[in-house]
Image (tube, rainbow, N blue to C red; front, side, top):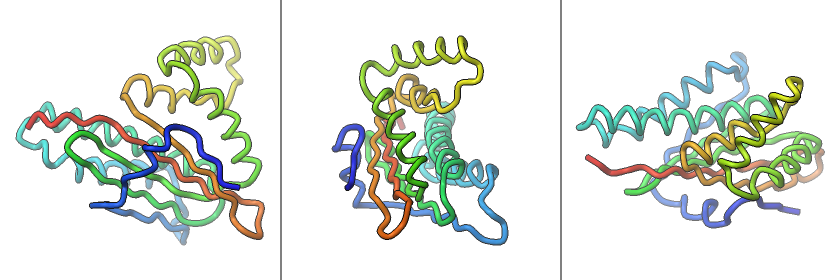
Length: 185
């Protein structure tokens, strides 16, 4: 059964003008540096329209790069063997990205529990609560701090679709994100 977390409108509307990058398993194996290299490339590409203003360019490039890097890092960290697909587009107001990968059933269940906690309420309040909880328990893991930071500090809207992979104990995860981009150029 397919399950969705977050606003449905985020997962729609990424049909036109999509740039797609596929990260494959292979002799190099997917590592952390692939996340940074890929996110830098995507950020450079989508920040180009802002080149007339150095400040706008740097701000847009940073926001896109941070968002994409964090989403790819999560995909690499929790994935089962297979490719990771990154699709991105931008309109006059928003940068949109979708990161797709496959995870183990148990990973999907744990992630869905986390999402049910961090997608309700104000992201800023939830971020403060989670920082306090992590300070009280330094061994805490899977806290969602990065996702809450993206929502609170970057204005990111996030959504996830979980779909079972037939004949396996794996789940296909699509992570959608959109952040506002000012067209100051």
